[in-house]
Image 1 (tube, rainbow, N blue to C red):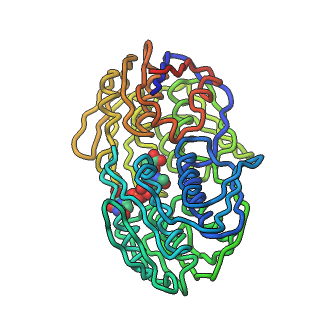
Image 2 (cartoon, helix red, strand yellow; image 1 turned 30 degrees about the horizontal axis):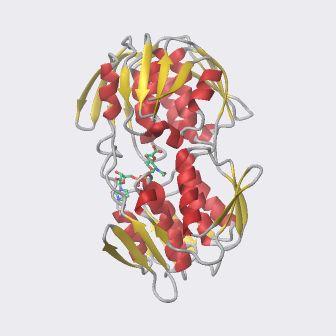
Image 3 (cartoon, rainbow, N blue to C red; image 1 turned 45 degrees about the vertical axis):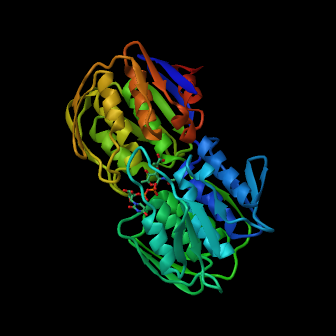
Length: 420
Ligand code: EPU
């Protein structure tokens, strides 16, 4: 196990390249299972979750080859439509193979994901959706088995109880090969959903309405190979925007999509951060003004993303006044607040509301990362804390941020990775 030592108090300046989005790359890898032809994926981030998903599809029977700019995947021949416990337990997004496998193989067997640090995170909506497409679902010894009718999945109406990102992606992948038309209602509108729809369309799928709450899919008999570049990671970009705003100086983010970052940029500007959007898509954050508190409530896209809540809370510890941070997507996503308190932050928690009072001088100490975004929040706090912050369990960070320590160090941060 590794930990991260951060010596706080340095201004950051320089250029940070933004990697491909983990949460778009995961369904993209699952979607390669929908065809026997070769699918080339570019701009996959080099992070542990992507390596886990790659292992999962290889385990199912895909031939995965490293190409110059990415991966070539071919899922031809015999496939074993199983996602075993050993892989699912390390990554809940493994359930993304349910839809593609049920569609392509007529059967999927996926281990039920266990508990999670940010909430209960059931997959009931994925299963209800597959049932609406004619699949029979049963649970057996910790595994979910979805079996399509003899002639394959049948188009149907899937009405999500609430928008679910991977649920929408899973059902989109299931319905592209189903017979007839499917309608996904109350669908998630995140940029990652739009990206997987555009990749599926390149593979021959017939989809309309992605990015809105209603997606129409006309099933086709088969899909073909394609070449797809993953969208830039909006949460990674948002995290570095906050790093720049908290530490002062000037950071330029290369290769981001400002249109995907709208809710983040808007809130940061309200807090007094200066963010420039250049014509070439670069984002520049500079900050020499005092930050002011703003309230934030997480919502599904186009609302403020829950995956930026922890980082925004770190920013609010450096703003004057009281900020109400409300988490509405997951029920238990304030673990980082307790660690921030240990660094000297003034945060009061009641249910899904955290009141952050600033500005507080943070002090470096030992802190424990509980999930990916909580870890990012603690790194951000460490960048401005007095003395040394030691972030334990940084494997969470390595699951989703490509080269975070290297990128921040190149911009002037003092960070070391140390073996425990
Ligand atoms: N939910 C259910 N039943 C379901 C599915 C979801 O009750 O069948 C609930 C969840 O428990 C949650 C809400 O619906 O309360 C929304 O969850 P959603 O399904 O949208 O989350 P997800 O698809 O499991 C993805 C991202 C998460 C991100 C959320 C919300 C991937 C691989 N993961 O998860 O990313 O927080 O959407 O935007 O895309 C991260 O990257 O750190 C991360 C946790």
